[in-house]
Length: 324
Ligand code: SF4
Image 1 (cartoon, rainbow, N blue to C red):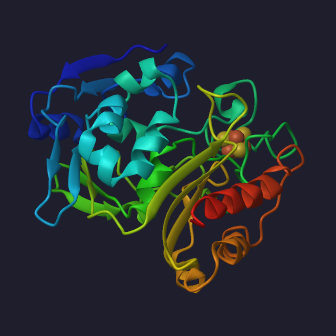
Image 2: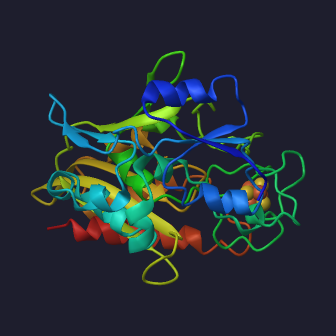
Image 3: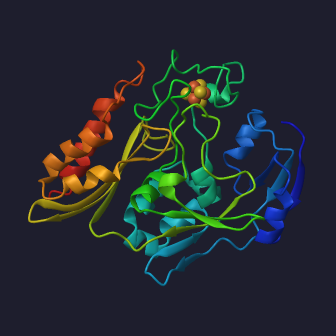
């Protein structure tokens, strides 16, 4: 690990001032991904600003009937909050499907959104990787790419986003709130994570000097909430494919549906423009329509070809579970 200086921030203002004009500074909270990246020297911040003591560890009701989640709320606390369990079951289930109990006790809401890909080559400094070292190449394209993307990938990177929580937040239309020395902003989660394009080294639209302070959830959408994750073992494994869905069914027909896929792209994968077309269909037909929209243009790279039928089957299973 490279040497770095450390500073404990006592307020949001202190934290954002501490990184101002300091491009190699990083905020640290749970550290469950950043410390690994530092040990592998994939990330080498010269200054760490500890944001664990900013009071951003509460979940508040909003006047609109939603929730405002502090960036430092631990994944376990969020998953077991009674309001999350009763009104945002898709989020509670996604959180509990992620990592292990110990990691969920440590990992924060903001850190979960910011965790980086688990592409094997990204963590192996001996192998070319455009995400780690822009312009060096992508070892996964011709390598072992079992966990890699089938949609939204580019010739420069085929990595996937590893978070379960973010997939649920995507169907819930969450908003990421930030602070910086220049002021704060609210970023819809649809615009928070990026596709790789020709800059796979940039995962999100968050600026280096911006601190996530909260994630806001609007009032829960009507309908049954489902999170289904397919993985190589029953726990402590990232999704090969996951589906987050909120479906409203009446008299055997879909009234409204929101669907996002995880484990298949560089960001949570949702096509809102296709969701209106799912209405008035039987769940089985809606599953086929959702699959056609979400997997349009899908292609594998050899070891991950199986993800296309797996995503199709997982979507079908989710829709059949709400047939009633
Ligand atoms: Fe690096 Fe992305 Fe290629 Fe993995 S898929 S080796 S992260 S460029």
